[in-house]
Image (cartoon, rainbow, N blue to C red):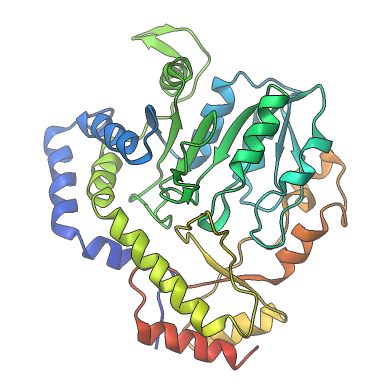
Length: 364
């Protein structure tokens, strides 16, 4: 049996006719930049998250850049975040000349440990950027409370959690600005790069809209330094069609995760979701010993795996200048040595899950 990790082909084939028609409509009209589908998608994203404003953009990374620029983050400002995430989270901070300040993670959820945040706040701290990892939202109430006490902004890096719930509220509508990604392998993915920002602050929303088109307030009138950060219309058309079915996709992902848990709970460390949270299962990640051996053996059986993430950000060469060393964030370092993601997509069958878990258990 050969398993597909994300099964992007199936994601297309399931709604091929509608997606093809939507894309053909854009091509026929030649509305490639800021066509009507972009505005329609933003309206639908607002309804879905219940945020007052949704602003689409060119990628999840650019969403984070736009958020920081809108909050006027300057060189030397400090942003508190986690070292156990994709590099974009801290990369965008450094890109603007600000300083990523890392806080270790919870061993249960792999999200930022809110109990460690206060000790990292200084006079230079301007914002907290929690990551809602693997599809589960971080402890936003506690983070927002800390931020309010210290007059800080909060940016939720929700690249992996669009559609997840935290205490009956949707990811992306839980902080000053929420940012997500529509990278193809994300739970809601387009056919290229794409992202979005969410806020309930009209002034911030208008500023973000301006910055994503080179700081323009009207044609050739530039109020801010900006970027070319628009979502192209073809991607908006794809996302509009896929968003119609997203609720069902999330439910199917949750059934896959439940099946995995049933087979694996008694033999390895499976994902933990807090009782007031739901996950959209961007990844299904377990912890194993002898990871390289297990991955190699599973590959021979046609079972792909991935590591999210093999090295915490504080140990990446590009962040050597921050002065961190091994041992500074022991939970992140420990988890990074054992974490392994299994195939996760809405199309995994019971037979495939049985095959994956049976072969895995032979190696544990």
